[in-house]
Amino acid sequence: MTRLLPRTLLTPAVLAIAIISIVPLLITLYYSFVRYSMLAPGEHDFHGLANFHFFFTDGAFLPALKNTFVLMFSVMAITVVLGIALGLLINDAFPGRAIVRVLLISPFLVMPAVNALMWKNMLLNPIYGLFAHVSIFFGATPIDWLSEYPLLSIVMMVSWQWLPFACLIFMTALQSMDKEQLEAAGMDGANYLQQLRYLYLPHLGRAVSVVLMIEMIFLLSVFAEIFTTTGGGPGFETTTITFMIYQQALQSYDIGAASAGALFAVLLANIAAFFLMRVIGKNLAK
Image (tube, rainbow, N blue to C red; front, side):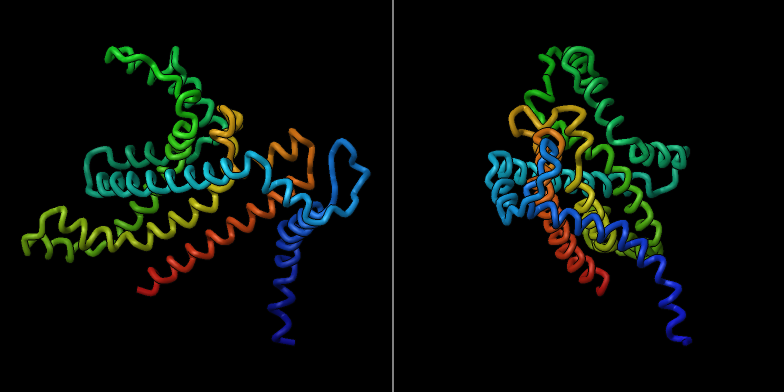
C-alpha cells in the first residue's frame, strides 16, 4: 500500500499530460493516414502514405527545410556570440548596471507578432523606417529589406528577441565563476584574451549547451514573424516547415497533408533534442 501511494498521487498529473500531449499526437497520427479536407469534412477514407508523399514532394518542401535550418542555426550562432559578449560586458559592476540588465532582458518579453510589426514598420520600412533614415543620412539608397533580404530580415527579428534569453543565461553563469581563480590568473600575467579562452569560455560550456537546446526546439516553430511580415515569400524565400504546415492546413484546407508535416516536424525536433541532450550530457559530466 505504501508503494502504491506515490503512484496514486502522480495519477492526475500523468492523466493531464496524456490528455494535453499524447491525445493530440494520436489524433494527428490518425489524420496523417486518412484523406481529410476541410472542404469535405465528412470524408475520412484511408489514404495510406499518400499524405506524406504529397507533403515531401511539394515544391516548397526542400526550400522550407533549408530555410528552417538556416534560420535556426543563424539565430543560435548570433545569440550565443552576442550573448556571451554582452554577458562579459556587463559582468563587472558599473553605475546603472541593474537598469542596463533590465533593458537587455526586456525584448524577450515582447510578443512575437508585436516584435515582427515593430521591425516591419519602425525599422525595416524602406520609406520611413530607422534603417532607411540611417542610409539616407550616410548618402546611401535605402534597402527594402523584406523584399531584397527576406530571410535575413527574419533572422534579425528572431535574434533580437532571443538574444536577451541567451544573455540572461550567460550572465547567471558568469556570476558563479571563481573570482580567486581569475585573480590568480591575472597575477600570473594572463591577459584578458587568455582568460577568455582558458577560463571564461570553458566555464560557459554548460550554459551554451542549455541555450542551444532550448533555442533549437523553439526556433523550429517560428511562425508569427513570418506570417506578419513576409507571408512565406517572396516565392519560398521565407517558407519554413512550420509555415508550410500552416499553408497546407488553413490555406489549402488539407488536414491530412498538414498532419503528415506536423509529424515530420515532431520527428525533426526530437532528433535535434536527442543530439543536443547528448552534447549537454557530456558537458555536465565534465
